[in-house]
Amino acid sequence: MVTAKQVCEAVEQAGITRIDHHDCSICGHMVYYSVNQGQLFFNSGCGCSWSPARPSSWEEAAEYINMQSREGKWGDVGARVAKGFGIDLAPIPNGERDAAS
Image (cartoon, rainbow, N blue to C red; front, side, top):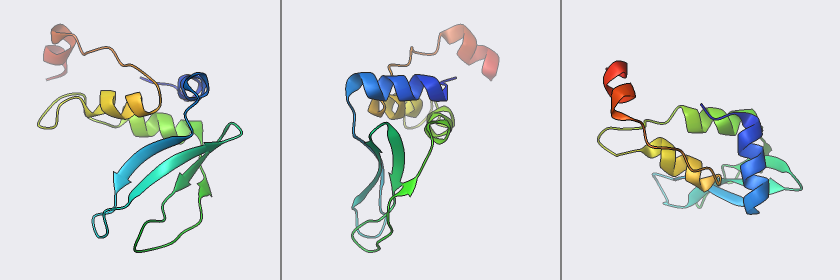
């Protein structure tokens, strides 16, 4: 499990200022997290709606990473999401994968 502290430190160390979240299913524009002076914000405004960036938390970012699937139809989504925050997740060993089933 990724912690809020790990997310914050990885983002800071990598100098990341934007982390894509998902594209709007209507207009296709990306909504994303942004980082400004060590603070995390979620930018949910897209091309078909507008909403100001809302303060977020590193705990929310860690939860977002941790809730992603690590295997299945779309592959290791958790690792891809974590990579956006500057975190390289180790692959799931086969033994752990089999035990989780």
